[in-house]
Figure 1 (cartoon, one colour):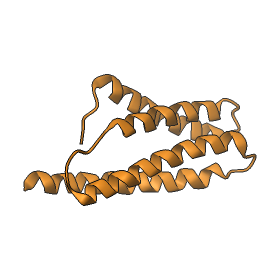
Figure 2: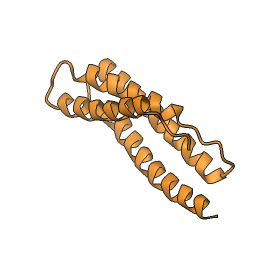
Figure 3: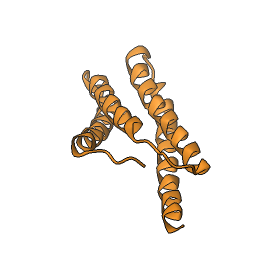
Length: 117
């Protein structure tokens, strides 16, 4: 996987923190929460989309596509926070988080297998 530089890594981490803060404070009905979440989702997703896999391992490529789908779902959740009066965004956020966790775990183990070969 292509590594991010220090600035990109900082944006990635700050985006993740802002996503967590924005999603958490939405439950407290804080008016700025959707803006905070959206800013974090844009930073997190864009930096993750910059990471590329240039190898030939089909499993990693498939997991990478799943990760990109979860990034899109994070952004869909941000849009739903503004558009929907209900908690519809929670469903897309949950699906995105589960896809993200699964793909990150599996990509790590597949990269270890590939490095041992």
